[in-house]
Amino acid sequence: MPEDRPPYPPFTQETALRKVQAAEDAWNTRDPRRVATAYTPDSVWRNRDTVLRGRAEIIDFLTGKWERELDYALRKSLWTWQGNRIAVRFQYECRDRTGQWWRCYGNELWEFDERGLMSRREASINDVAISEAQRRIHGPRPPEEHGTEIPLW
Image (cartoon, rainbow, N blue to C red; front, side):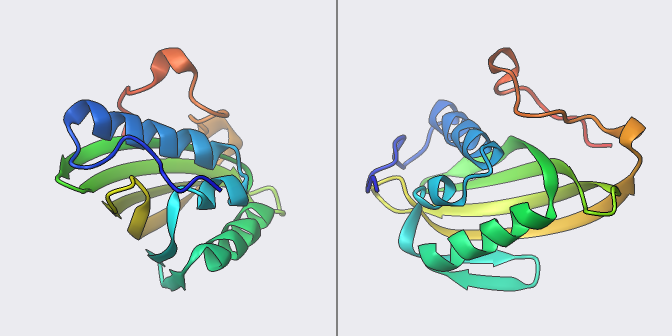
């Protein structure tokens, strides 16, 4: 497992944008082990009402998430940054096993160590039931759209 994850703090607008796009790309693989390598071994998460500690719990959580949230596709946008912290807004869409589609809106607060690994993640997320016809996110973002804003509503 790599123990460095550039870019490193303190972040600039350019490096914060790269960090956000790298996170989006990794999450869109739906590979819990790959995603977990971006976090410190003792990383602490708050995800909705769940608190996780460490990569093993992150891997377990993401494994269950992507078993429930089918056809998951995510978009993240940089909100702001300072020093070793980045704030992000995001949306993702998925369907459950009954076929109901969901759009999930959220905000994340990230804190990084000196090696560029995320040591803390706090996520607040709201879910909205949508029809398949209302979907806007169909798979990973094409490279030509990297860094573009996502519509809020």
